[in-house]
Image (cartoon, rainbow, N blue to C red):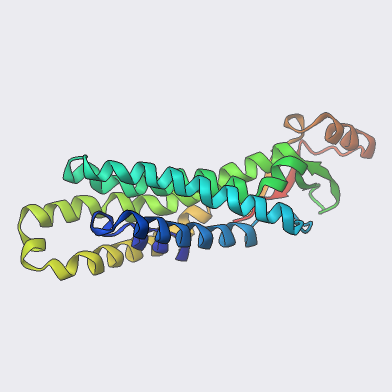
Length: 227
């Protein structure tokens, strides 16, 4: 919830900021998200400092470039369409930041276990599924708070409310975002179980061989998807 709220605050009044200001606050935002994504990863092995630094650089720079590119559309887009650009930027940035901060999982896999919690091996396929689920959950969390308020703000703008009371713009948007996140956060966290399952037939041949040797009769193994 904190991450999504921070992202929305970062995009408010973006048209009034200079390019250096946008770059600075986007870097702060993506650095914060990188820390969140790293601490909520699935893998259980430590990441070397060098690899962590590379992942951080890729996550922040990739998400920064993506978000800035989409933010530039605000200046030329119609008012209502322009209000949806922040959500597109947040969604795109999540698609870059999360995989980059969990790059080791993609390369080396995450633990998969049987129903009793016995570790069978590490699976890159499970890691990709886990990261995809987390990305979809994060985008889902942002959707209500960043897609519904634009209609409300556009309506108030047409009625002249924002012109008469310009000071309510940012507080109202943040308040609406917080209200929607109260419900969206637990709902989207529940979209995919923390301990998710995956068909054994979908896993790597070496995992399937290990399952056969252990004579596991279940059709699924389990993995921690992270948050």
